[in-house]
Length: 207
Image (tube, helix red, strand yellow):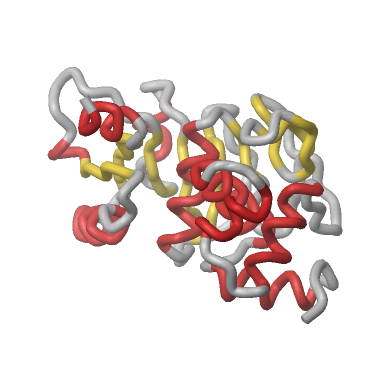
């Protein structure tokens, strides 16, 4: 029963890039994240329905018809349809792609790197800046974090791991992971270290 419960929390992610070798490489890197089950087009079993699909300019239109939330790896931002949850740089770090995937699976559209949106934070069930559930992007110059995200970021800057952050803020480790994912996406950061450096440059934290 425990194994089944753990499996239910894992996301089936279809990696369908124009280049098959690139798809396999990205799927392999994403497989190191225990919350994701990445598969390429040839590996997707008949009848299986992906929670999120990662595509690029070449394959976005084909997967779009399936109604799956899309993460698009593109060289430039353009006007994508509502099924596109996030547009990330083609060379985006694996951690950033994984973070965007979790948010997309939760029904959120994510601003591209320096853009912002307004909406709800499902982990805390209060308004948070930078995400929108089925909403439209609002382009703004500044990066805005929710109060909880600011608390998580401050603890990240102190080097605290997820379990310590969860204990300090009296929230679950799962909720901490969600906040970290949102922070990475909002800051356009590749990893925690990059997020802290970006936050320092933006004056969001002081070390």
